[in-house]
Image 1: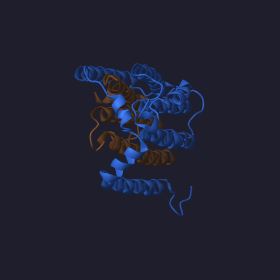
Image 2: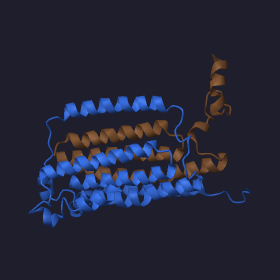
Image 3: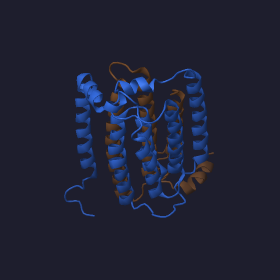
Image 4: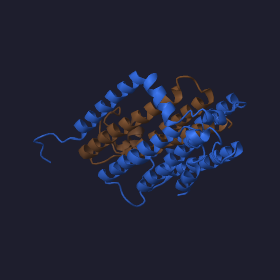
Length: 119
Length: 201
C-alpha cells in the first residue's frame, strides 16, 4: 500500500480536530476534537511502524501509550469541566474570561464595546 | 452507520496469525488499498460532521463512527491488537465518558445554535492552511514509498503475541511508569470531582 494514503488521512484528521478545537464553544466538544487529533497521530504512528518494521516496534508501543495517556487525559479533562460547570454554571470556553487582560467578568456580547473603549 | 458494517467486513481482512502465513485474508493488495480509501473517506466525513454538527449528542455519536473507522484502518494496516484496543478504550470508554460529561453539564438535546464560537472563520482558515501545508509536505516526501503489507502480515507484526513480546521485553519500564500515571490521573479525577466535606449547596 502507498504510504501516502494513511499519512494524508492522518493529516486531514488532525486538521479537522484543529478546526474543532479552535471553533467549538462547548468544552466537551473541544475535548472530542482533541481526541480526533490524538487519533490522527496514532494512525501516523501505526502506518510508519508497519512501513519501517523496526526491532523495537516503537510505533505500535507508542500508540498503545498514547491511547492510555488519552484515556487519562479525558478523565482529568472531564473532571475539570464538571468542576467548572458546578462553580460557574456553564461549560462555554468563551465565557471563562477570568484570566483576560482586564481581569473582569465580561460577556462576549460587550467585548466589542470594550475593544472600542480601549481603542 | 456504514462504519459498523465495514468493521465486520474488514475485520477478517488481515486474518489471524495462523491464517496470515498462507493466504492473507480474502483481499488482494489492490483490494486492501480500495478498502482503506473507502473507510478513510467514511472516517473523514464522520470527523467533519463531528466538528460541525449543531447537536451535541450527535457529535459524540459521529465520533464513534470516526473511531470505529480508524480501528478498521488499523486492521487493514495489520495492527490487530491496536485495533481491538482502539475499540475497547475509545469506543467503549472514552465516548461513554464524553456522553456522561454532556449529560452532567446539562447539554441541550436538540439543536443548539451557539455550538460554534465567534472565531470559526479564522479557525477554518487556520485548519485549511495547516491541511494544505501538511498534505503537500507529506505527499512530496513519501511520493515513492510503499508499505509491504504482505510481509508484515506474514510475519504477524501486529498480532497479540508479537505485541506482548516487544511490549514486555523492550518497553517494560515505560509501561510501568504509564500505570503509575494512570493511577495518578485516577486519584486526581476523584479529588477534583469530589465535593468537599461539610460543603453546603
